[in-house]
Each structure stands twice: as structure tokens, then as C-alpha cells.
Length: 152
Image 1 (tube, rainbow, N blue to C red):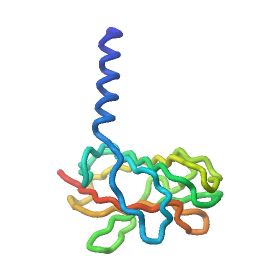
Image 2 (tube, rainbow, N blue to C red):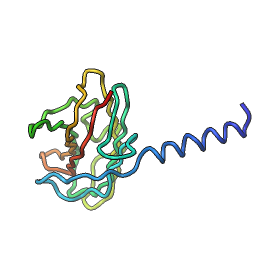
Image 3 (cartoon, rainbow, N blue to C red):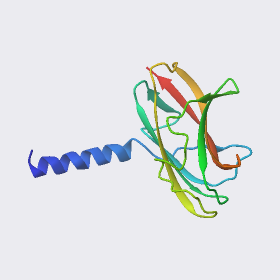
Image 4 (tube, helix red, strand yellow):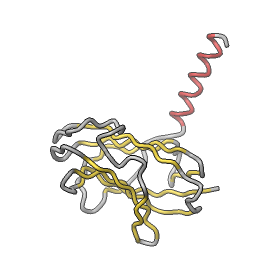
């Protein structure tokens, strides 16, 4: 492969990544501090985000830690007809493989990065998703809700 073709391929892939995601609109959970600067989902070009079975989704949350914390845990819920249903997280340890290095320091900005797969057993559905990160005492570092659809 020539250098020109390789360069063009890299530029095209970069532009595709930029064009298929943007910060999403979200709601801060009622009992959570307003610590989030932005939430980015890839791939999500418009809301509600539409994901297909087999997709891998990258979630990036830019936030400011409200308190010091030695360890953090993430949770994700699907809210169906007003009822939160906890989803299994591939990695609920917020200090491991998430872009965070614990301990976290109050008033410091961080980027939390996590991945999830849209597995084939998920039903085709529209729902709100709640994603949170809690400290060792169960207090929110952040918590947000966004609309999502699983489509065919």
C-alpha cells in the first residue's frame, strides 16, 4: 500500500469517527451533583442514539470530581416504563481500564471512558439509560440519563 493511500485512509477513518459522534444531551440524575461537562457516545450521530445488535459503544464522560475518592464503581440501568433494570457491566470497577487513576481528587477534572456491547439478547426497544459512577460510600461522582434505541 502506498504512503498516499495509507494517509488518505487514516484521514477518512478519522473524519468518519468525528462525524459519527458528538456530545449528547443528557439529564443529570435528581440526587446527583452537576459535575458533568460532557458525555460523548460513539457511534451516535443523533439522538436518541440508535444502536444495533453486535455494536460496540464507547462512552466518554468528562467530569469534575465532587469529592476525594479512593475507589469508584460504575452502574448502568435501563429504565423501562419508569422501572430501572440494572444491566451487567463488563467492568464496574471505575478505577480499572476506564481512563481514571484512583484515588480521585476533589475539584479535579477527569475523563471516564467505558465500552459496552449491544448483545443480541437485548430486545429491540426504546428506553432511557442511567449511567452512574459512585464513590466507596455510595455517593454519586456523576449520574446521567439519556435516551437510546436498540434497532434492527
